[in-house]
Amino acid sequence: GAGVSQSPSNKVTEKGKDVELRCDPISGHTALYWYRQSLGQGLEFLIYFQGNSAPDKSGLPSDRFSAERTGGSVSTLTIQRTQQEDSAVYLCASSLARSSGGSTDTQYFGPGTRLTVL
Amino acid sequence: SQKIEQNSEALNIQEGKTATLTCNYTNYSPAYLQWYRQDPGRGPVFLLLIRENEKEKRKERLKVTFDTTLKQSLFHITASQPADSATYLCALEGYGQNFVFGPGTRLSVLP
Image (cartoon, rainbow over all chains, first blue to last red; front, side, top):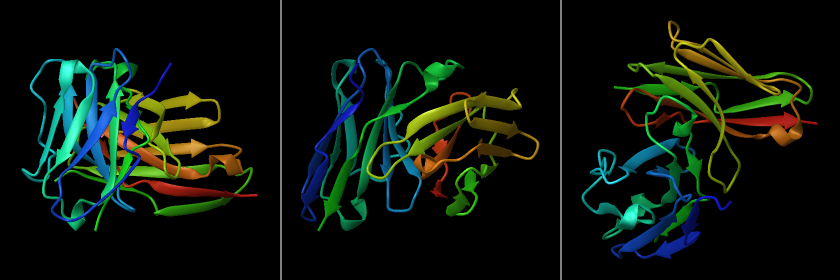
């Protein structure tokens, strides 16, 4: 079956522009995560969606970052007024469930979107 | 604040030897600990999960230990091969909490 897909794979933008990153999770997965990975750094949690519940936005670094998930499937991460420090790889992951205590917590990652802000 | 450390940023070993990677954490009480592999330009791929009440987990040439007293997990790859070269990430999850990933260890298995 298809895995998690993300688009675009690469995005180069100018400082101050808005960008939208898209994530298509695995069909049937109710949990969806966004992470950011800077060069040589670990994954930084950004936001988490679980079914129809309110998203956990605790990892968003500023109010320039927002995300939505339509119909419990596709998710879009939006960065407004991009800054050079936003340059990173943005990874999306999905899992069957959340905190169920078992292997369904395993996250399946997409290939990421490499964002470069000039 | 929560902190996760993984041993040296990079680890070089000879083919056939056992690679041992370390994940240490502070100010955290994880219910589960996972190990992922990440190749350049790719997203992480899940390898193994171990629960807080489990001491050891094995899968083929992989072995993970979890010591909640030492707040440490060890990840072993036996009979290592050049194809095992990648970055390995540990990730911790507490009950009802989000995943926290370590910075990763880049493993190079030399032929």
